[in-house]
Image (cartoon, rainbow, N blue to C red):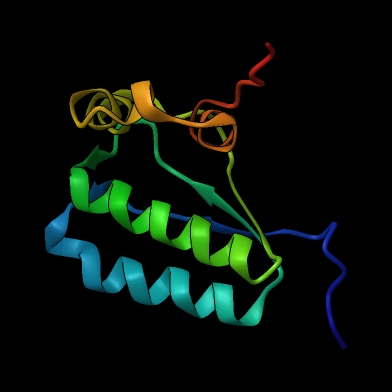
Length: 109
């Protein structure tokens, strides 16, 4: 029996969100994306992230969109995740979807 889209599967990530853990993070997120229609990612407040994590999440977000699935962050990017987004130039280049996903902000013109 399929779960309706209004029900989300929550993935609680570990504190280590770097290249060292990329393979297991990728497996965990991929498994959920293959089996669920709606995923919420919970990033711990004190998590240490690097660019590989941001790339992994961006890839998963785009894959979910292409498959008609819902993929969200439980709270706006903060701490080291926000710093990585700033240093890598993501924030300046976000479109409306990126701003809504990462920062939980609606862009109005």
